Length: 153
Ligand code: FES
Image (cartoon, rainbow, N blue to C red; front, side, top):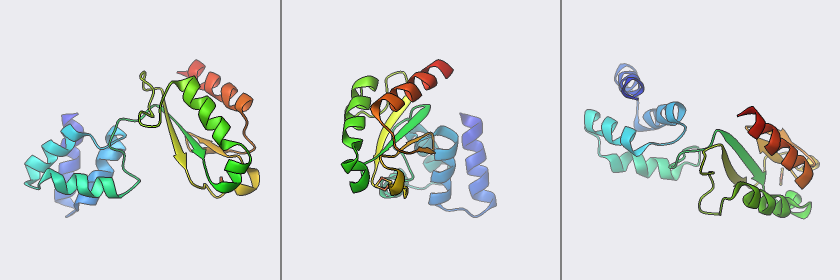
């Protein structure tokens, strides 16, 4: 961990970076905005930690909690909703045993998240699995995808 933090700090100092750059580096290295990482960097650079968390909570690209190894993104836009995304989401919450507030599984294998539109409404309902868009999704297809991911991990 310290090696990663040293690289982030060096990168900031060498490139006259800004807080946003540091946050992007933390997200890249850790997969989320680690409080420990922010506090150490803030101390080293003499920047108040609240500056980091203020910016991180503003941008949706940053995640304040650890994320799972696999990211399941279910589209909740109107076209996807009409074609049954709500049922897929409900089934996935049950299958992965996550609630609205706690969207990463205990074993850190999956993070279940929602999005408003991924721009593929013509093939709704849409689910992105680790960034790969799957169209015309249904519960059976989702269950197969989840099984494959579990087998691979
Ligand atoms: S609303 Fe789901 S892809 Fe557009």
